[in-house]
Length: 75
Image (cartoon, rainbow, N blue to C red; front, side, top):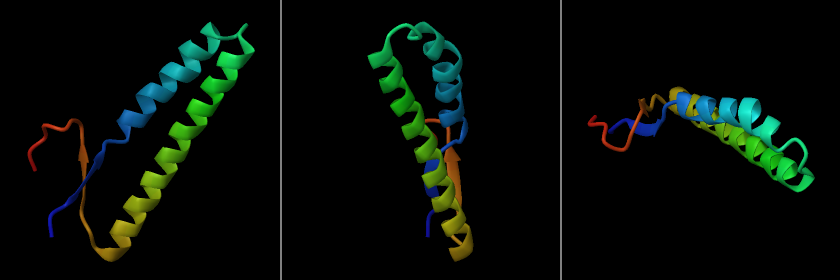
């Protein structure tokens, strides 16, 4: 079976850092946008956890995961 292509974990870390460090400050005085930003950050964190669970499940089943940096990676 081919390896399972998944986003490299850095694809979550960079947007999270940007949102938490820069965007959060920029929307500080705007409650509606601050709430939407909070929801976006929570969604990205959930996606990271779900991917980690998938990777752990694949490891238990002996399935290989291939962390990709782009759609153009050839494996």
